[in-house]
Amino acid sequence: MLESIVFGDLFFYQGKTYIFLARSANGIVYAAEILNLEYTRELEHLSRRMAAKNANKRQNSLYCYVILETQEVKDRAAHFAYPAKDESRIVLKKLPYSLIESDRISIRNEILGEGAPIPLELISLVSGLAE
Image (cartoon, rainbow, N blue to C red):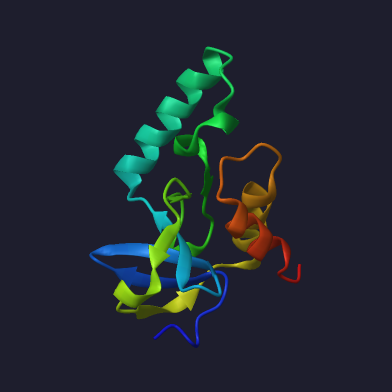
């Protein structure tokens, strides 16, 4: 079902746009949801409030995101709060564009960043990707 999709490709699933991150050997697909502009603004607002309180945002998966530069999804957040999806339930609708290289690098860095509350399996899978 997902044979021809690679890190940074975008797909549509259950009315939302996602970025494919990785696939595990046991059928788990890891994907980042691309938030709409309204949710992105709200997330950035909450993030600024947490920073003002000197709270450690890295401990909360709510604040694991990257603001994208790819034209088709520019200024929207790629959010990693719930990245695991059961592959058997995904009906893929791959989109005709992919992320630009700088967005791929930013996402990789966010996932591999120290202290990120990201599933260990996803960290392992992404760390194994060529830079």
